[in-house]
Length: 228
Image (cartoon, rainbow, N blue to C red; front, side, top):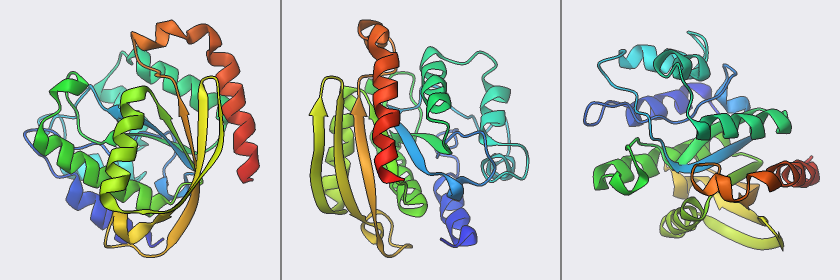
């Protein structure tokens, strides 16, 4: 993947909309195209206001010219949300380069408050990130994100092949072949990815299963060994 092309497309899709920059990902490394996988929720709760930084600064953080996108998150959000902390726990256990993102890369205080325009730009941005990175795996947490993930993939027509790998308590897995051009016309080719669905990492749903989370995280870790 040409990093210059990828950055140009991301730049165009992250211009401020209604006072916020749509956020494509958060990660603790400087080269997003080196990500092995992605962790996806529904959408972000904390917005990146265009009053807080320029779009050039925003891009510099996301492409490693000014720290990392995790550094930007910490700059704008000194107190991480419980969801962010749970995502970080999962990412740390996996010990792989992972982009933390969403099905809709656009912020709203609550998922039900996501506007139609935010949903549209957020979908386009999420699909662009997926197409550009071509992740070996995607972990989607929560019932609402799972439903939205399938809905948007079906609308895009990106699924070439779909094979159910397994379904067991708290973990469901599918192997997909996706068409990159269907996700974003700037890209071409196809790629295989393992998609894992787990319960929500967000409150209040998290409290209903958090005692089982260590076993689930370990199971996810084991399943990812099948793609190495």
